Length: 230
Image (cartoon, rainbow, N blue to C red; front, side, top):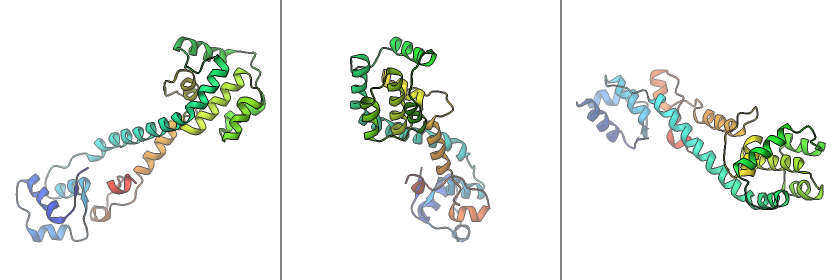
């Protein structure tokens, strides 16, 4: 987003866009209650006041915001998953005899069996662990080794561990553990989308945009770039 650090720079940009000189008296009267730096929203608002063409800034900005937040969340997830990977390799070694990921065909067969089997013997502790998703290092050592979990319990523990650390839903966590691939699973509990929605709401939170809001009385939902990127 373009930032204008001084009134002179801001005025020059407006004059260039309009193709004519703005009298100093008129410009100073309009800018009386505002202070630099100015951003593109200030520019478009003043330009519209002067008779220039104002673009639909919000419509083109929100997808950009979503993209940036999505990239940030993905990067954060990848860092967390990288830290978890040594432990996940140990679990795969214990369960499948190899630390490597399963082929997509084998992973799908295991997931189908995990979801459809009527003979699952799962202790309440593992169900509680998965539902709560509040795990610490000691917990995971206990759930993966000391309690001697069966395959179904082990998968629930893995899903709880990954979900707790990396903002993935249970479906996403299970598929990542088995294949190393990322999916976005449609589920009631999808913390990835919950986090994205929360961050977007924070980004678009109405804070009032200095003098621009006071001049027009309009609702300003986009914060200054410097604030939004903190």
